[in-house]
Length: 246
Ligand code: SF4
Image 1 (cartoon, protein in one colour):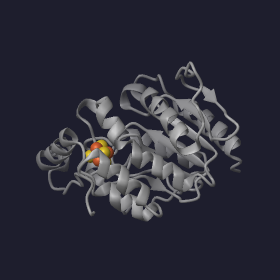
Image 2 (cartoon, protein in one colour; image 1 turned 90 degrees about the horizontal axis):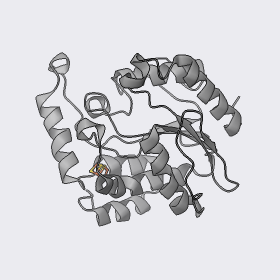
Image 3 (cartoon, helix red, strand yellow; image 1 turned 90 degrees about the vertical axis):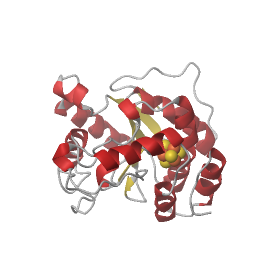
Image 4 (cartoon, rainbow, N blue to C red; image 1 turned 45 degrees about the horizontal axis):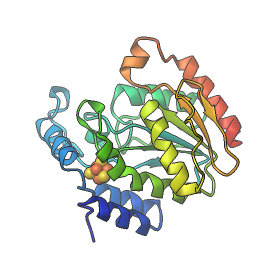
């Protein structure tokens, strides 16, 4: 089975992935959400004027980072003209500029910029992934699309489980997406009621990674000052402390 075209095929292909390279390849060959497949391909075809001379990736965007990550960063979904263009998560858009500058200040990235898949960017102790792997219209996946894509996230977390110590959820969507992952991968019943998302929110269990809340690095948040570089620095300092990263 080369391509996943139904929710059942996503489940079957995800559990078969033996390592991150295998998983990343399988993710990129997923066609299980008709609306998102149509959108990602239309964006890739029509393009934004500034990128008219570029060939868009136009496929699902796999996770990025090291296989022995202690820190996971969970986002919502790729950006239409960012990850969907470059093929790498948070790469080629303003959100990525803010995120990778912060990771560089924290010593978790070798450079402060992320402009293209071949730009030499490397992470330390960190892996970044999204709850939904295809760019959705208006950044809003449907609940069904979120659930269809969840097996990719679960398998990715399962593969880095031996080292993973903390997950930074960027925004309320990612925060909410973590709880089913906690149950499926770690066999841990999510707390009830669920802890509310907020910037700096923190949940810790004994048999699973800690969860830290962070406002999403969207332009809406960073341009308005709702999320500042200092606030991001505080979150990543806390994540490093919880993960035991120097
Ligand atoms: S959103 Fe996820 S499940 Fe849906 S087509 Fe993209 S990669 Fe596949």
